[in-house]
Image (cartoon, rainbow, N blue to C red; front, top):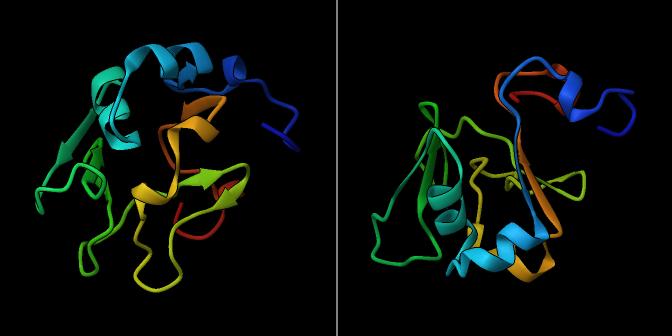
Length: 117
């Protein structure tokens, strides 16, 4: 993690990572489909019948595009938070799979990532 001086191996917790090779070989339709098939403790809910706008649940916390759903996950893309300012929703369809070179999931809360993370 930049600025912390810690590697993923030094963080206390189950940090899950996917490389560019893992992402390419998965042949997933969307990022939520990728996380559902490759990561532990991840479940998705297809409430609209749209595979690009699914709710993602990780260890009981939700991140999804539907306003009104209590959001409990923070999503960062290249160090920038992508949760929308209004409602804290995450538009998963705005994160293209071909733009990802790696993917990390950190459990727990850490104030270094910002408010509500």
